[in-house]
Structure formats: C-alpha cells, structure tokens
Image 1: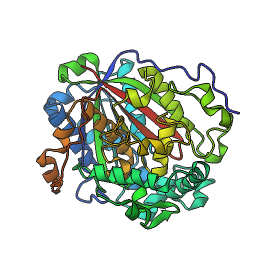
Image 2: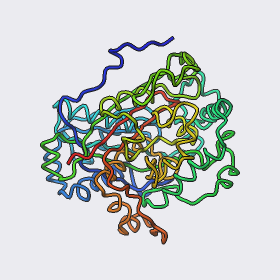
Image 3: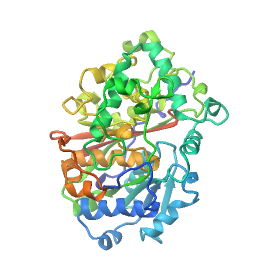
Length: 452
C-alpha cells in the first residue's frame, strides 16, 4: 500500500509573489500549412505583448531575462531542440531558456517552471510559450505518437490510441457508478456549444445529445464529439515578479496556488491507498471504500495537485471558493473523473456537478467556458497555457475584449455568430486550471486570483 508522509504533503510556498500579466493565442486548426511553428509562436507572443499588455515588442524584449517553452513531441515537427529555434526567432538569444515535456500536462508544467523561475528570484519577467505541430503526419500516425505517452510495454497493445485507454476507464466508471449516459454527453454538448463564441476554436457547434451519443464510435463507448481535437496552434502567457507586474499593467493576476502530482505510467501498477482527503472532505465520506482507491476510475496525480494548490491558496470548498475553472476535458469520462478528483463532488457522484447546472455559465462554478479540449483545441504543448490565458482574461474582466471583438474573427477568416453571447463571468475573483497527462501520469493545478 502506498503511504504518504507529512513531508510528501508539504504545502508549497513561493519565495516571492508571482503574477500573470499578459496572454496571447493563435486560432487552432486541424491543418495549418500556411504557417510554420515559429510563426505561430511569434503570433501568440506578439498578441500577449502588444494587444494584452499594450507594449512595444522592443521595449518588452529589454525586460525579459528567461523563457520557458512547451512542446509535447519532437516527432510531429521532426525537429529536435525546436525550442531553440523558437527562442531564436523570437529574438531572445542569448538569454537562457528551458523546454518542458510532461505529456498532455506539458503546458501546465511549463507554467509551473516559469512560476518557479520568478518565485526563486532567478528571473523577473518570463514568457511561457507552447505549441504543437500535429498536421505534418496523418491522423493514424499522430494518434500513435500521442499514445506513446502511455506505457509502450503494456498500454500500446490496446491499439496505439488514447481513446481506447479512456474507453476502458469509461466502461469501468459506468459499471461502478451507473451515471446517466446522457450526463457524459452533456459535457461534450456544453463544451462544443461554448466553443461557438471563441474565434480561436476548432470544433464549435450546437449538438443534440442524440447526435453525440449516436455519432461514430472512436472506441466503445466514446464517440467522436466526446474526444478532444488534434490541433495546430500556439499560446503564450507572461509571468512577472510584483515590481515588474505593477509597472506593466494595472490588472495583474496573482498566482496563489500551485500543485503538481504524478502517478505510474502503467495504469495497472497503481497501488491502493486511503483516499487523500481535500479540505472539503472528512474521514467518514469514504469509509466504504477505504484502501480501495484510486482504482481504475480515479487519478491520484490530480488529487495530489488539487490538495497542494487548495491548501496553498486557502481553498476550503472549490465550488464555493473558485469562480472559474478549466479542466483537461480530453474525453468526457476524464472530465467527470476530474470533477471527483478535485473535490467538486465526492467520488462516484461527479455527474451531479453537471446535472445541478453548476458547471454552466449561470452556475456556481462555470467550467470550460473556453470550449475546452473538446470544443476548441488540444494543441498539446499549448493546451495548459491556453487554459490559464482564458482564466486570466476572465479574472481581468477581458473575455469580451479577446472574444467579442470582430477583428479576431476576421483575422482567422471566421464570421462572428449572429447569436453571439458574452461568456464573461460576473466579477470573478479566483480561477483554476487543471493540466493533465497520459492516463493520469502528471497533473498540475494552478490557481490565479485578481491581484489588484
């Protein structure tokens, strides 16, 4: 049985305050042959600097002293040390930089690395830039590359397809907890719908539950609308120390909670243990499943990340204390699993978070208003960064600025919907993003709070 010591569970502390001050995105597409990865990263970074911060590029470059890059797989672009090329094209040489790779959580882990650089005093202004080039191989080969982030000795035998790994979890989840099948389809319906109102989205649309559940099966029981997009695109978020943050913006967003967790790459190697309780849970809640967790339907890495970030940020009840949430909805089943892992509902009751209406714009904790991975994107190295940019814009009250302005729709050759509506949350104070890898091998949980 796995046992965690008090030192294992030490709550993180930052040596000095860290702020997110600007963000930029490209749009996300299945194919993007007209732009190289370097161009996409430059576009996202330029948007963060000139349109969010309102600075000149030259002025910004003179303040940068470190940078972090996020790319899931060298295989896609067939370029080792691609970060060095991006760094050069952005004009940051000879400044130091690192490239981070933790599977699907690469974006979140990269932001974590940037936070550490600023919090330690090593750097005062750090752009974190992520991208993925997923259109230079066919879909079958691309799925094979992605599936290599699971254990190739065992999981690969299931067909070199992540949807298959999660389909097995979904089968088990349906068997153990008997949720309404329609509830999982509602997650896909919600996220594709919210993607309609984003000029950056790849798979927007209004789908009926019947259309979702009767679509072609990717891996039983997951249908196509219940599986994330394979995307090309880039994202950038800029981190700064307190002095620099308030010098460059009057709306800095403070990092108040950071957590990361991991678990065995091979899912079957995971040992049972007592449930790690979150601040809103008590010992009696799981007395019937003591020492039978995490099993095949839960993610210890996500629970660990949430435990650390909640305790660092002083979160007592996430549904009450958070105002906006982005989860890693790679599949509908992984989304409902995450609801339970991060304590939105007790284990086995995740469906209630959706059915209660709390996950929607009008609810207590609007979730994936960006459209998420199902509706908008999963350009893997950019994903965790993109989620945090969306959270930051919400907290700054700037969702409309970057989603409602016609110029962004026109920039990407799109028409703003005639039924467009604002998804800006009313006066949000705190927001969180979950970045998740593999079948739960790495997870980060990062909490932002308005800093002014």
